[in-house]
Image (cartoon, rainbow, N blue to C red):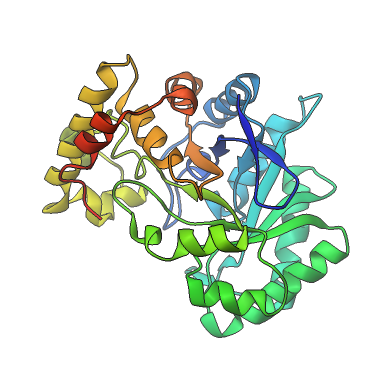
Length: 316
């Protein structure tokens, strides 16, 4: 698979990476419902065998389960991929997931992540959310310290706006940014992506298929049957009045993909890869069969007619 340098990190990453949010399963507020660990490990192995060379996860995914599953999948690999994870989303005393950017909390999180992942150092460590906003500087300074100590190799942020990126950069350059980006989430095109380009911040965007909505496999019946511990059952994009419009877009992607023999999801991913600021995309796979159809997006070239048809009626 084609590789590009992630910002100025020196890491050459494939254009598509393995997103491990869903492999954390359900059982918590931001879960994805039932997920068999065997399917998760199989999906990771299939993706790595196909050439993907990085995995993105987070301590909060499955409340540690995702990192544990990733670690289990990596134990049998002679050569491991880059491993990226995130901190700052923790469980409070009342069971709610809250933001915590204090030094002590982040240090507890990184030590736990190292154990679950089974690695000596984390290749990219990221602030998951800029919450609470007033503690951004404390959290970022802590990541700088972890890098200086060799506990993590590179540091980045997720879901930051331009003002928050500027604040972090008064302490140390931001190496990477992880924002949402898809045909249903284009807000970052106006300011965040241009800022990242100017600053040479590596961008690994998440949810290019809008959490499955643009995969071509989502139907009204499937959405109605989502379990209560799948966060999408409560998501606004999965409800009217947005749902009809989103499914119409997915159908359009499917028609365009059919002309090249690829899925709607591959078209959605290829569209997001076109942006010059985007180094790589985080794509979630829950079983081995989902891998190859999406990887075709890495080499799919969309023509001007395709783009015009895709963006007709796409929401921003």
